[in-house]
Image 1: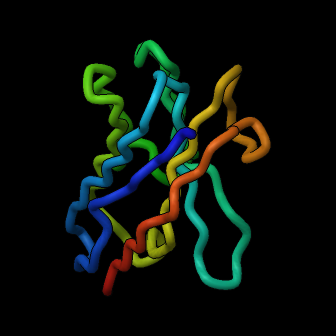
Image 2: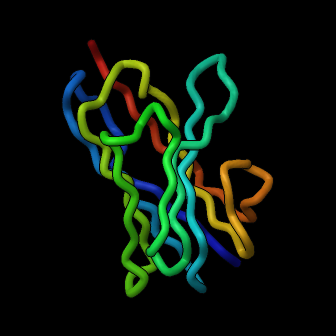
Image 3: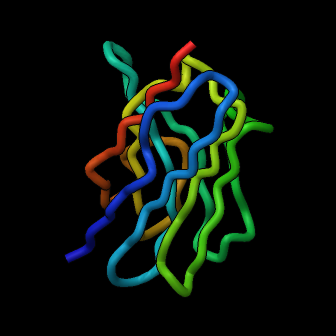
Length: 120
């Protein structure tokens, strides 16, 4: 059974940084990060292909967030810099067995979520 365990969320002031981690059991996957703010739909944030050679970001985080992975540890990271109050959300990592993209249904496994709160 595949498990995704996220960590690294918390409370930070605007302009600060956090690094989220997502450890996956089992095989290596294409991985993505999504987020959901209160009262809003889940939103794609970033993805990284299995090899780590290709990444993609939603426009609102480009230049501020960086997704990376360590396949030896089966762990994906989301480095979040210059955080803004509008980044406040529960962040979820997701793993896909096949081709992944920006849609949630392209992923097969999901973590439990970690709260990120950015104060102004």
